[in-house]
Image (cartoon, rainbow, N blue to C red; front, side, top):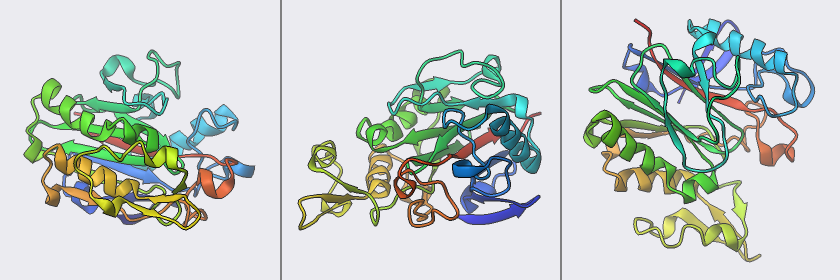
Length: 270
């Protein structure tokens, strides 16, 4: 991913998505917000225990940096599942500047300009989607539970069924998240993936202590390929949030004492 600095805010973008001037997307870092303590400083998590006014201010900082209207933020109401919502203008402001009008949701899709699809992360895998033909954007929150429930491919299915997207036109970006280098699990997590028909043995490493190192990037890549997205259309950041906990919030590196980053994507307003 490309590292960007603007108004002292550090954020990351996929060069492949940057090629399309009609969209805005970003994955935030920890830097240049007003939160303090464990949440220092650009904490985007409304359920982290941080002061809500600080979080709202952080969203305003990000939106000013990206020339977006914060009133149009639509936040995923995460439950580590595979529920997906088709977002409309009636959802504008949801989760940050007004109450959620919907229950647990880990995937957001829209073809309406101006809406800022947003999900928060602190090791879980963000997946960004864009169809430049049908002008549809999406974001998925794919932790190990969401990955086990195949939210990545379900987003592709919904783009096809609900918006008429053709899978060969979809581009996808797998953003900063915990890498195989740091994601050690017990056998119960490992067994969630062993029946996936599209995986070879490259997605895990069995350790001498009986635990497993699991590559969520590889699993999601193979899932998206199996869903039909061309390999050249899938981009992986390669940035481990746990290894880079000075730049990103990491649940594992901090023992749970942390804020969250935000992944956002939006069709520019007309």
